[in-house]
Image (tube, rainbow, N blue to C red; front, side, top):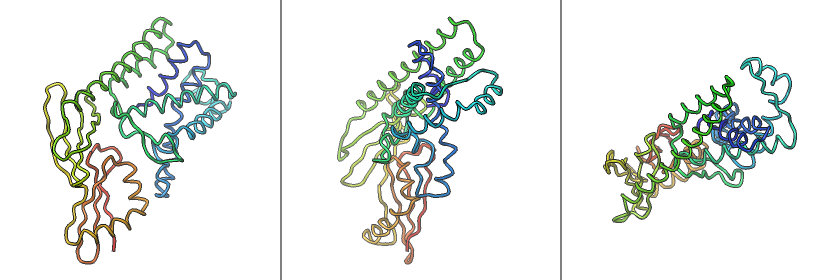
Length: 312
């Protein structure tokens, strides 16, 4: 989800509950996305790739650490005063056990929203690095972003309370309605494309269009994926393609597997697999060196790019 929605959802919930610490909840909601300031760690030390956007801060444990630290910093007079001057609005918050809990509530709402979107987040890190996602929303929903900006503008300019309340209600209705529509359309996409042949697994992934889904079927026995876009409006498939999980040229399968096993210990390969939905490999041997080209079955142009690794 976008930065503005992460602020607004906990803020609106606390506003509806008449909680006076709604600002702390909103700040907790955006705190996790300041992980961009620690992303350099993952760049300088590839083995610490979890230090990235939607990485370490997007887990139940480190969300508490992050929201608490963020609240502490933002509550300091020097920092708070500077920001208040820049935006010309008083954003004074206190650092207490109550506001820490409220900020963490905002962080949990952030995790829920990101759980609904593509690729997901490592909710249970450091116990597991596995990502969890409902795959309902695309990374960013443009309509939601626009409405969120309008609502924030109304709040910022302190328009009449009835306008603020109406705007916030409309935003929540749109957000929940879009989620419901997307969940319904996802089920339709899966029902319209039942498993057949040797395929034993199917899943659907969102695109920017809530009525268009990326469908992936897999045949684990033969190491094959079938992927295509599917429109639930006109019931049409397009961009259909079949992909092998492993393609070997110039050498034996066993030799290629040995090279892959060596590459698995490399941080860049682990990082790629962490980001990828269905990592596949094209392995080619020139007589001396194996060239391993890693790619994802689903090409979303989000962080993941083809990765080339050379193994003796």
